[in-house]
Length: 376
Image (cartoon, rainbow, N blue to C red; front, side, top):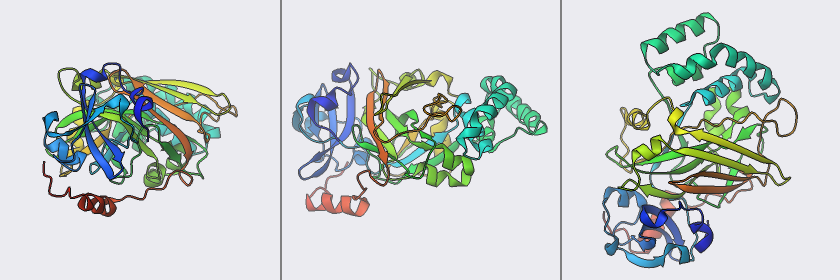
């Protein structure tokens, strides 16, 4: 959460020229916000949720209540989404694919990663970076890797016809910019995953994008892919923000395709790690990932879709060969010019602020405010 100028500092340089959706915690409760021309508008009289606002696009700012310039708004900012399902795609980049294979073969033991990484990279690296997922060439590569004893369930979703799509967090359980982000207290090998995240409406149309941190527990998922839920879905383990930038003349899906995402981790002991993820290296087009998410499913309240990351840290933090893992107090900054900065401080999921407002409590609040008659 944040108020006024500290939050505005997270926004892209051209934020006064874009249109954004978000949520703030006003005294009466969570409130959907439209930002246009640098001014924040309370849109709860148009629709009480961001999910419903999306269905009302394009929005008329004059239908909302003027709250004033965004950088003067003294109210805590929340995660910018509410009723949308939180979906995520994994192993959509070659480098991160190889790291998942390494985790699998190391059985979650970071001390074994260095040796396995060298062997896997030598045998598989070049081939997987050049193949188109689901193609005839991909199927031929699969047969070769099976014959070499190198096939993996992660390679299946990396180069096979079906992308990995999973549910990252429950509805209303995400945290926003400047909030604490959580890792399980029993995890000893973990990292942030800096990603671009699409906002998709009920009809399956991508309407905007934001930044996200799909916190990853490498030791737990590495033991078994069946532990994905334990590795991915924990208290405060999914952050989004700072705001959703809507697609318009100043920002389009091509900006997502060409996004260069930077990561900075600053540790309490003076540690510093910089990383980078280029969306130009993604193996599947973002809109193909949307299509695969929809497949034979409907999302009447819309969904968000994490697109995956190129970033997979291998730099040792403490012991040689054990790579990177978080420490409590790490400050994680994910940034890209068109979407701004997503900044969070790492704590354990046990110590992070508990998730207390679920769907029932959220709707009780809306009802008490007389907002449930507002329709998009």
